[in-house]
Figure (cartoon, rainbow, N blue to C red):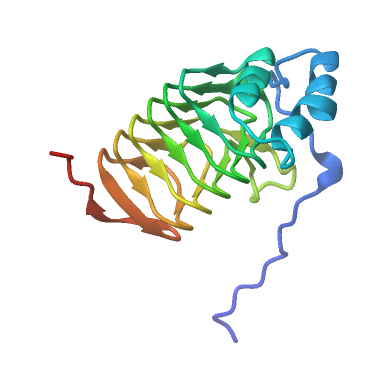
Length: 193
């Protein structure tokens, strides 16, 4: 019994939470309201097929999206003005780009069904539950497979593959194949002939 550590459990005090100094949603209240009440539900609509109008809608709200992109029904984007998508990218059904900080997808990136790109978290060690933000960057020709999760601050280098359901945090080497939770490198993607 002497070996047991006796400590008062540390829990978050949500009443003490404050928005981080200097952080803002990035657009005026009216633009945010228009996005959350009209734009976001329309973007995610399952009854309306097509990508071109989804691209136009995101661009209308400030997203930078290249040509030839395919955006599927069920797509969620928290703040389109914090989104940059390169040429010929695919964003799958039910993918969620929870971009409290910037999300940058380079050319030919595939984000598959149900993938979650999370740019914000909280400090669970602090009673103030302070928000911690980190941008996410995905290099050209990378594939984020179905149900994969990218944590705040993740950088996926070109050609990497994040496998089905993998949970990734930090830097991913170029061409690496990652699997698991926490994700580990299990192979290297081969170059096409």
